[in-house]
Length: 277
Image (tube, rainbow, N blue to C red; front, top):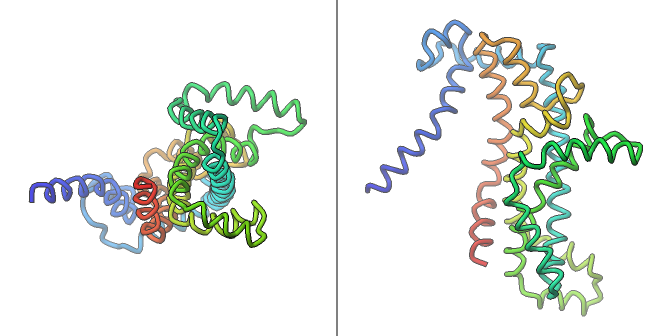
């Protein structure tokens, strides 16, 4: 009984900030500061605030939403495809090189981002000059950055899951004439659906909500702005309009919550299966 009470209290503490954002998004700026803990008198005010946010030229929510969606989709897609293939090769290759490479990916998970963020910007500038293609303040630069930082954890998760897949399934496919590429995409990859959902959500939430890496790669005043950058700029310009600031935060939360609710069963299944195997 005590454990259930503690769990309920932790749930309420975790949910309380979301509750504050929700109820205060349906108020005017004066109501937010005067009575932040009361329910809104008119819940339709949320949609009016959303409309104001969407058309406000200072936040440019429409273009920011498009930029965040494009960066998140392409980054997560690349992480899933490359990490799954890399983990499969590392699991099936029973060599010291494969074991060493896997340990390097695991070790990379322990490196703090703050240590490499400035060298990353410098190398992007040097590499961009070398190849004649700008990586800073562009979509490719953001996607490559997220691929690099998200690959280690994703390979680790896929690696643990693939070890539980019987190799006999792949042998049977090879005997039937399937190539290695065909074996992976026709036999192995469909079996990775649970852990793929886990990788997708973990990386998707991180990329969608990330602020520091877009700030370094894209910078301020760039035509490409993610939602966290746009909300931060908006909050700086309208520091007293908490109704619009909280509404902008709510609009940024909604896509992540929807995707999580849709894929939560696969996420839990993937985590449990990966931990057991």
